[in-house]
Image (tube, rainbow, N blue to C red; front, side, top):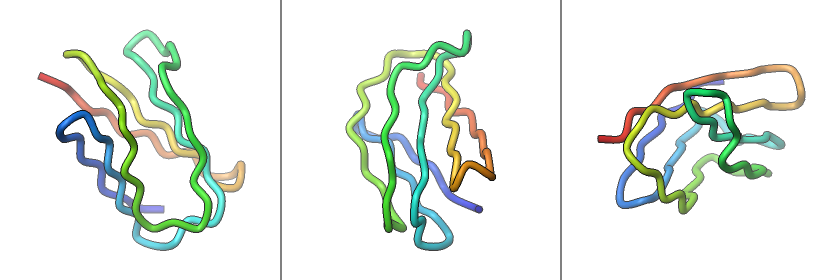
Length: 76
């Protein structure tokens, strides 16, 4: 799975390289504390309202309980 993540105006936007049938997205702090999560079903693009404060976060995406992809974002 490949994807592009952008965070702008308190919105987390994820654009996938294919239509994601079923996946779980978790947003974690540096200390691995989950601050938000949501499901994706049959989508190629997600726009999720997510007000974040300054800091580093990890976006963890699990598709069909097989693939785990983690990306880091830094909010200034």
